[in-house]
Amino acid sequence: RKAVALVHNQRQNEEMEQAAGQNSLPALREKFFIRLFNNLFDSEEQYTRQKEDLGLVFDAPAYVVATCELVSEKEEQQSRTDLLHLYSSAIQMARDTLARYSKGYVATLDARHFAVVFALEHEQGGWQAAVEQALAKTADILSGYFSLQMYAAVGSVVQDPRYLGGSYHSGRWGFHAAGPRQPIVFSDENGAVRPGADPSVLHETRTGIRRAFEELDAD
Image (cartoon, rainbow, N blue to C red; front, side, top):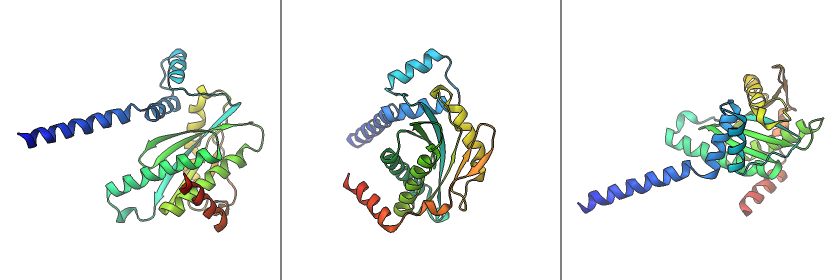
């Protein structure tokens, strides 16, 4: 009976921890963005209330969403559990890295996809280079630590965060153009896709990579 009770209590604790994790602030913020991307708010009032309750601040003049995918070249050699752990760890590192090089939020979409909401300092020129640099540095670090490739499709710019769904979906529309030869692409509201800089941008010098690694390890 004691053994049965112990197992029962352990299961209860695990369920409570899982529920707590699902209701944590980061998890609730991710749910908020997923609803925002897919226009699932019933009213402007509901959107505003949830935004304020979650402490989300949108004070930038413009925003853009990048959809990112992680790819393992050794996927067939790894178990499902190992892959889930790998992708989860990589997304967390991506979150930490992006916070160093840009302002905004990261929302996990599924096991190996995540979206980045970039808060732009200005919408006229220059923002593409800043966004691409942040994504390139993140891709370099994930490649170095986890041997993963990261592809990204950046959507159109919006001034009102209420319409981030437009940026998200325009980026997803152009995602087919991202791949090994062109890891980062940009897509506008009309569906036009253009490549980012030469893929060599994703390969920092050894000194730059080493410095980035040392900065992460220092935390």
